[in-house]
Length: 231
Ligand code: DX5
Ligand code: ZN
Image (cartoon, rainbow, N blue to C red):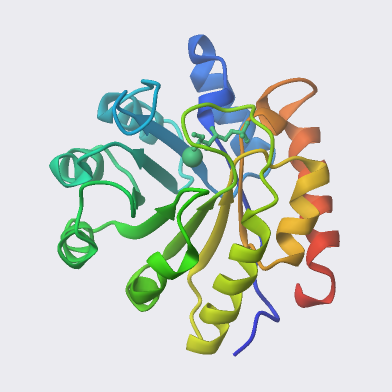
């Protein structure tokens, strides 16, 4: 199998939403055609910021049927995967750079009934994730240094996406190849052309304009970027 027919999906990141009106942001994303929601969990150690924990994931779970991708930017994800699975996380994404052994954590997450995502930071080579490609449901390539929304896309992510796309296609894998950080109508197209299938979008969905129109613009950009490879 190659990448022909790969389905492109958009996952708004709630980190960029108004936390005082989170229910409305969730509803707007769902109504606007989001395919999943992305929830950025930060512990102040793995990244220089603190966001939210399982209680918020649970509150969002109660308000939408969309899959919830929980991006664990935390030093010791193994200590918290039970709580995030119980809170309703559909996919638990942990970092290759965290204090976690994929050999142990991948089966643990699966045993909790969640899908498994592995994330790599901008300075981490694709090769660090390669041994685990057959065992994960999602590889998330960071295109900013994690910690904050609204940063500029780092183009170094593009060759990493191309390498990952080639590796997934060689395996015949249907795993998601996600890109996270600085995705806008300008950067979404090259990311799609490089092989990304799943686009995390924070500020480009929730800051300025309407969520529905922002999602429609991003949908056009990823479809155009992927060209003939998409049905
Ligand atoms: C960064 C987070 C991203 C971020 C995306 O640490 O992992 O998910 O919130 O926001 P934008 O799209 O604004 O870069
Ligand atoms: Zn994220």
